[in-house]
Length: 484
Image (cartoon, rainbow, N blue to C red; front, side, top):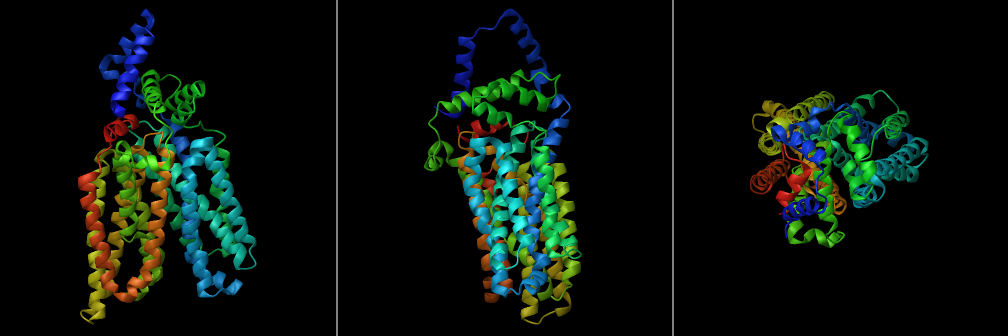
């Protein structure tokens, strides 16, 4: 029996087992008028949902601070601590190893102690990491601090979009989840900019600010109602959902839909890692993992980590190029947040993928001209244009949308395991892309970007043939249709 059939069967069983009283029938009749519009959570003022999102995306901003820290501090740290280039390279790259560990453990921890409890744990790791970096007198505490912040960053990359998706009404879910990527970009950009005027130790302390806001805010927001329903805390579930939707909103329809879906999933055996590869879950796993592969292997981290070097190689000012890069990234990501629930996930991914192919081809042409000493006056213009097209198109779709879809498609009984797997693949792809970039550039500068263009073209084929549109559907509807 499919999950969708199980849900329908569970609803029928509940109706047979507990006949409605006359007053309840009257309420149900009122509820069902106008296609149930009275029960739509979007009818209430979602101020608490907005506030919860603001608190959660402090973790995303922290993510950006971690990513953006190493670029503006490289010269100062190497000078103050007398580090070799290989020692600093270890310091920079160990972040992704910490993120992989965070990805593996984030799902089970978030399922065991809740989304809020998990965010507290990950914040503690980031605080410890920044303090270790601040007080570091040598390479070992520096690397330990970077590893700890990497762990927190990798775990935040899973739990923040999942928490937002689980609390948001369906008509706001895409935009609110996309704010995750916007805040990551903001964290990176701010670190790039203020890192030019602050010492590397003080810059480490600025990473504590989003941690403090997050820890304080978690005391003021409710837990994910879907997680509460999953662990059987029915009273807390109803209180949380009512608080999120507004005290005057009728939540009975949404609450019943969530509970019926949870009941159906509880009849299934508890998910293990190998269960993700069963036929009923295979499509959602392929979609989630596949989008993460498309996101990372298309070249984003190679360009992000080495953008200054790319501009210098092309003969353009790295300072001007990097600042322009940072500003475009934030502005375009903000635009994507505004339109994702209007245009839809799939169209944004396809527009983004098309732009990534074009950007890579333009950069490849630039390096081809330089290598063969043709039209040298056009080399820097083409390189800058291609890089800016690439980051703009990545920011509008491929940056945020895979995380949105990942947070939507997994049934709650496998969300921890499947989310951890997808996040692990994402961070492994980030490491592979950034690690191989310099080797590829030594092989062929223009060939490297032709390779990225080909990967992005294949990603578009994957999106067209495999990825569904999830705009305007509840999480339960999405999961039932995918895993039917």
